[in-house]
Length: 590
Image (cartoon, rainbow, N blue to C red; front, side, top):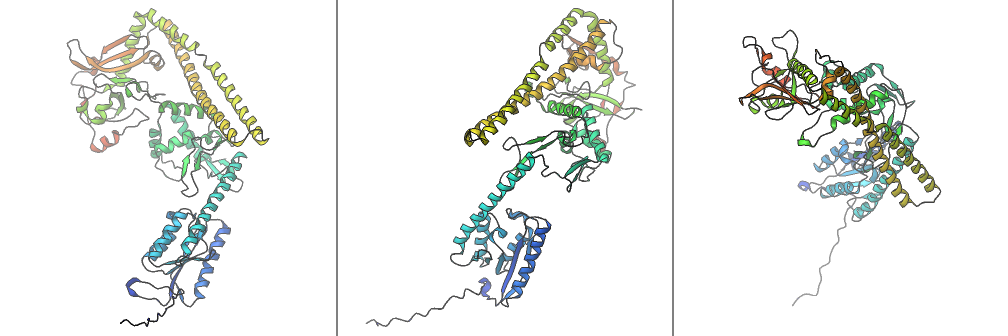
């Protein structure tokens, strides 16, 4: 028979004031405390706040006999929204996971992390190790039952506060940019920035480098070549580096500050949590300040550089071959290999000559080895020039009627484009749409249009203006090209009407009449002849010359080869320049 007596249950109350470690069954008599403090900026006021926090926590730990100080973990001048950037925070977490810390104290949730996800991640991670976090302002201990629920609510509020503050800061920056104030500018090559007066002044020593870059680029040198030249000349970048990169040179060429203007709002922050910055492709407003400061180069030089830059970036879909513009050399991108169809590259030979010797050869053979285009040969630039002189004179002598018809047709095409008239029309359309934006803003301020319709119409007008500006840029480039072509046609007509043969290579004549040059061909017997040069004229005529006679006899031919070091250096190709590579195999140069 079972007893009716029920055993008395004795309750052993929890001791929530002591922190115990379950690791290895050890119980620590003193709580190992790690205060964490942080300020968001490097301003004097914030640094004082940081020092105050450190002093406060030292005193707090010393005042409690049951506490022992592990270390004070502190991050200065770093935003709280990205945990990965806070080195001392990461050190503290690692020490806690290694069993060195029992309690972390911090002023508030926002001091610990302003991102709900990060806050909960670290709270739960530390809770598994029986490590508590005490948030003083909110009076939350993460090891208590209701601590995490309250933490979720309060950390969400902290994140909202960050987003609200970020929106206010963003609006403040926009207002500054609208007033024409500089935002985020710390100076660039050629300019010094005074943070007190917020003014930009020319650094004349650096400005000379900027002028050199623009002049060389307009002369036809590419960014890669200019970078190599600056490195060789030991000029310094704004950061003090003597090694220049292609992208650095290109960035300078694209920078509107060098003509005295400033474009604000080139980038924007995607969100206040990741702080990821993106190029502004129209998602946010931009602000353009005309004649803001002293220019280093003229507006004409800057615009010419942009024209060349844009032309070089264009690609042709014809046969998938990239087309080059603003050629440094007369034959750049014009010469094609008859055997594989690739373009020819210009090489410089030094061996055996008192002066440099320039040759043109298939880029496939040069870059990838003769085995990939075995029939091609390097042809001297002088030979190609002489072949053109002879072919040009014969064409002018034997095809007068065809050439006259070609010139008249070319002049007719230029005169009927009306580029200048179309340019003025586009400018009027841009001005008209800008006026519409001003009127739209007035309507919004007067309450005559709601926000939704205002935004819709505003975006439509901005998109229209951007398209018109792109058309204007293309039209201006075409207008300049037409003027150049007019001059070339006039020069060619004078030369043609004089009935005098040209005695030496004339680039103006070459550019005016030649569509393409083909290196290589076949003899009448069907044998491959690498010394055949064919000029394809814009009139539709073709002229071929066998230039093997210019090679000289076998006794005068010289064989050249590079050493391993020379070959490696000479074989670097530039996308901006046709100077380039050497052949891997030894070869005879005609």
